[in-house]
Every structure is written in structure tokens, then in C-alpha cells.
Image 1 (cartoon, rainbow, N blue to C red):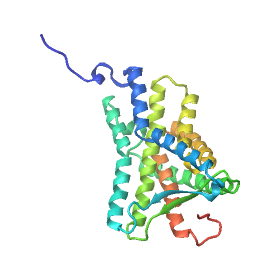
Image 2: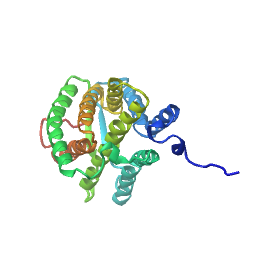
Image 3: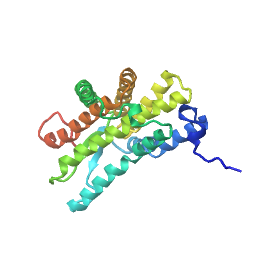
Image 4: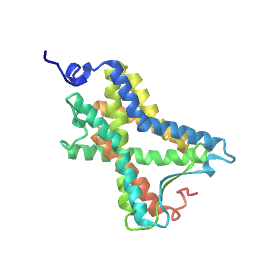
Length: 266
């Protein structure tokens, strides 16, 4: 007797995968990435609000030295952190292959580089200016910690690592929180409105360590990004925009901290 073998995808191709599989897969992907970051940010926020003193008197450091005084070891840790943070994106790519799809399905590819770059730059220009203003207002009102985008030593690899860190953030967040999550929630039967809320609240949640301002500002950004993704069908422009925003924040802080009066420092 011949025994039939095959994967789950052989029996349930594409969107015919059982709902239980899709639900559990989504929870596992989020549990290994930004869902876990959301829980971590919540715990950090609780620690900040229960600590004596106001939020703006506390600091949230994003890119810190992993081995002070040991630049080569520090560089190794920085590169390891960036690479390991992208493993969930590789997992998503693998899971999409099970459906006979790829990251191209989410619009993360090199088929439209110039439109993606142009749209991404335009988004970054609009959100960047309003985002800075909102952060300064939220901090001034006591709703936000003082965000320190970088605290790396002044070594030759500082700016390349900051740029790589910004790109890693952008790829991880936009591929998973927008492209992958919206696809899975649609396959699970969620309405477009509920999926938008879920994606946006998730984005805000893992920025909660910055304070209420970080949560609200990023949640609003999440709403905008979901609308744009649904309009264009591509996460490419969002990855470009997010990369430019974070590069501006990380590199800009490194160049301007302590030199201009309007930029808060610890």
C-alpha cells in the first residue's frame, strides 16, 4: 500500500490553512517578536510611572553600548543584536513559502525601487516634522520620558551601526505589524476596521516604554501606515519611510545632542 506523505500546505494550500493553524502561527510570530516587545514595554512603563519623579525626568535609551570600553566586542554585540532581531522576518518569509507565496506578496521586494523611495521620503518628511513636535509637547506635559536615541561611544562604526539599527527596526515592524499581521487577520476573518485597530495598538504598545506620548504617537502612525499599505499594497514605501525617520532620529541626536537648546537630553 502506498503511503501518502506531504506537508500541511499540501492538504491546505494558501489561505485554506485551518484557522487554528493560522491563529497559533500568528501568536507565535508575535510572541517571538513585537508582541513580546509590547509586554516588555508595558512592564517598563509600569516601572517608570511608579518610580519617584516625573516621566520627563527619566530617560529611555534606544541604542546603548553593550560593552563599554571594549569597542570591538561592542561592535560584535551590536551586529548580533541587529541580525537576531531580523530572524522573525525570516520566519515570516518561510511561512509565506508554505503558501506558495513570498515577501513579494507583502510588497517587500526590489521590483519598484523608485516609487517606494519617493513615497517613503514623502511620508518621512510629513511624519518626521509632526512627530518631533508631538514628542516635545508630550514630554513638556509630562506624558513622556526623555528619549535618548543613541548612547554609543564615538568610534568609527557608530554611524553605520545606527543606520543598520534604523533599517532593522523598519523592516521588522513594517513586515510583521503591517504586511504579515494584516494578511493573517484577514485570513482569520477579521474585519478591516478591527485589523487596523489591532495593528495600530500593537505598534503603540511596544513604544509604551517611552511613555503615553510614545504610545499615542506611534498608534496614530500605525493608522496612517495601514491606510497607505491598503492603498498601495506594498510595505516597501513604509520600510523606506520608517528607515528615514529612525536614521534622522538616531544620527540627528548624535550630531545635535548638547548643541541645540530645543533637543532634550538627560
